[in-house]
Image (cartoon, rainbow, N blue to C red; front, top):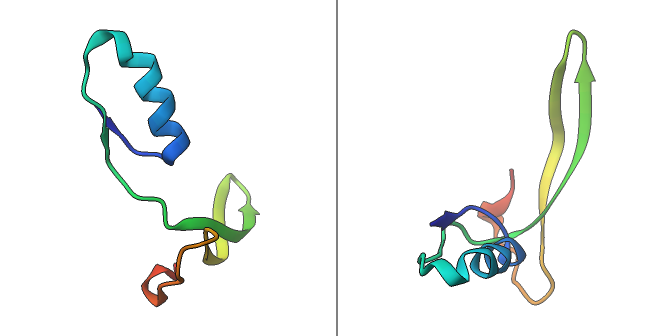
Length: 67
């Protein structure tokens, strides 16, 4: 099973499928938290503006992580 989520999501899935013998594969690596302003326009368009990635403590910021 491929998990597209953070470390906590991976652990949750591992615990859920532990007794089934299913192999859990981390499908992505978390770079940090997204900081953005939410924008809403009628009739129902939702967008994120001024997005940037805030690195998790202990990780170095990478200029390629900017959204």
